[in-house]
Image (cartoon, rainbow, N blue to C red; front, side):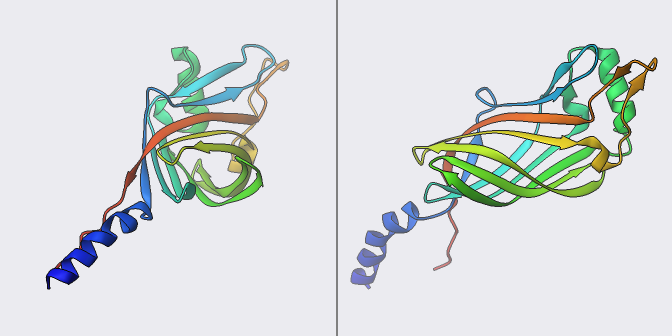
Length: 188
């Protein structure tokens, strides 16, 4: 029995080193921005709260889900925020989600992320470039994801016949987090 215990204790560091880990996102070091181009008054909105569930294993991202509420996007102008939420019908469609399906290598730390985006309660497949840098303890994930709001059932915004908001918006993000090993509890 003692030999079995010593054997299992000796393997524990090896098992833990190879275990999947969850990233704990450092909100002070991370940011998510929505860039909107317009004829007049282009702006960058900031997503002030979100939930990123990212799993890593052996230095690779193996799963990711990003959830947010549209009410947490702020542009710096209350009137513009109200107009944006009216256009998006935020009370009826309050949440958005991106779910990663795969990260295809391009070269070195550059990848193409493939996944589904749920926006305005419509689901679409999207792909965009990301850079993932890690020392296997700290992860830095940067990306730029353009998408066309018309693909999600939203109209192009026109005002006064001359002013127009580009329906293609760009989400820029920098997520930084530390890996925390996921430990399965075993019964003895």
